[in-house]
Amino acid sequence: MKVSFVVFLIVDSLLSTFASDTKYSIFCHWNTEAYERKDTSYFYSWSIDERLCTHLVFGSVASLDPKGSGALKIINRKFVDNRNEIFNIRRHNYKLLISVGGMKDDAKMFSKMAASMAKRDQFYKSLLKFLSQWKCSGVLLDWEYPSPEDRDNFVKLLKELKIVLQDRNFVLLVSVSARMDDATLRSYDIPRIARHADFIILNIHDNEDPYGPKVEYNSPLYGNGSRSVERGVRYWVEQSKISEKLILGIPLFGRTFTLEDASKTAVGAPSKGPGRQHVHSSRAGFMTFGEFCIQTARWEIKYDKQAQVPYAYMDDQWITFENGRSISAKMHLAMKQELGGAMVWSIDADDFHGTCGETYGLLKVVVSFMGSPNILTTRAPITDGFCPKDGLFRNKWNCQAYYECRNGRRTDYECSEVEFFDEKLGQCKPSEEVKCNQDFVDWSPGENGYSSENLPLNLRVV
Figure 1: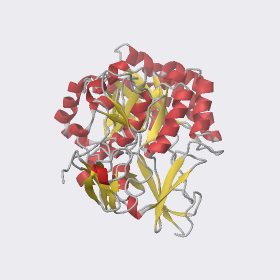
Figure 2: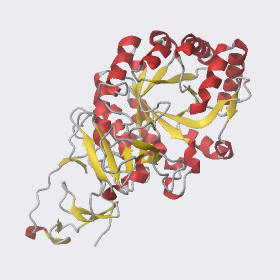
Figure 3: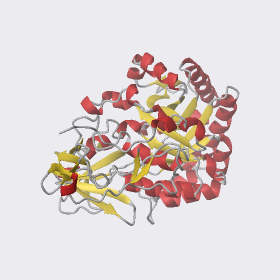
Figure 4: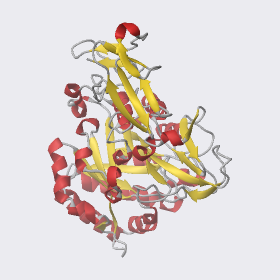
C-alpha cells in the first residue's frame, strides 16, 4: 500500500502572486497567547503560510501602562524573547502590524487615556517608538469596547492618531463591535470613524460577557437579535458609506460552554458557564478549530440553517464554532456588500498542521473568495465532520484515493495506478473490478481558470 497525502491544494506558482494581485485585504491575526499552548497547539512562526495573507497582525502583545500614564506597555514578554523569530517573518515581505489592547480589562484605561491630551500624547510617542523599533507597518487599535460616554473621545483619538501615523506612512486599523444593541450603537460615530481609520474590523464574536446564563452562537450570520452578522454589516455599510474600508472579522476558534442540563442542547439552553479547558489550550471556554476537528467523531454536530452556523455537543459540553460552510456564507455576504476584505481571529486557531484535511483549511475558504482570480483552491476537505466515524472511506472524487478515520484523525492513502479502492471490501482492487465514477474536473496551469464565482467544488489540479 502506497501512502501519500492526496490533497487538492492551491497551485503554488499562482499563490506566490496573491499579495500583490488581489484588490482585497486579508488580515491574519496571530494571537501570541498561542505561545502558552502545548504540544500540537503551540504555534511557531514557520507554521505561517505567507501566501495566504496580505497583512499579519500580532495580538496580545501590547496594551496601556496600568499605572495610567497612557504609554504603551508590552504585556507578552515571550513576544520580546522571540525577537529573532519575529524579524525573520519580515523576509516574506509581510505588512506587519501590532495590536494594542484586546483585553477585556483594558476599557477603563483606554477611556482615561482618550479623555486626556497629556495621556494621548504619551500614547502616540510610545507607539511610534515601538512601530519603528519593530519595523511594523501600522497598528490595530483594539479598544474593547468604548461606552456611549467615550463616543466623542474615541473619534478624537482616531483623528489625532491618523495625523501622527500618516506622516510616517503607518496604517491605522480599528476594531469595533458590530453588534446591534442600543449601547453599542450609541458608542460609535460611524461616519467620523470611517473618515479617519484606514480599515475598520467588524466583529460580532466579541462581547463583554460571552458566557452568560445560556449558550449562544459566537457569530451567527442571520437572526433578529443584536448578534446578527448580516444586520451589523449592513448597518455599518449604510452609515459609513465607505464599504471598502470595512473588514469582516471571522473567528476561527470555538467557544465552549458547560450545559446546565445535558439533555437540552439547542441554542439558548441554560448554561453553567465556560466549557472545560482543553488539555492544550490556555483557558476554559476556548478551543481552537485544530483541537476540535480531530475529536468530531465523539461530538454530535448540528448545523443551524437559519443562523448559518454549526454547533456541537458531547455530554454536558457545548461548542459554537465555524466550518467551511458557515465561512462561505459569511464571505458571500462580504462580497455582496463590497467590503474591503476579511480578518481571521486567529491563524493559530486554524488547523495549521492539516491534521483534519488541508493546512489552514478555514483560512483557505476566505482566500478562495477574496484572493486573486488566478488563485485556485477547492474547499472539499472542509466538511461538517471530517471523520464522522472510524473506518476506511473512498474519496468521492478520485477512485484511487481513500482515507482512514481513527479517533477523529484522518490519514489519506492512494492505490496504485491500475487499482481503485473498494469501499465495501476496504481494500484496493483492479480498477475493472470496482464500480466507481471519478467525479472531478481536471485543470492544469495555462488553461482557462476559475474564480470564486465559478469555482467547482470537485476541482482537481493536475
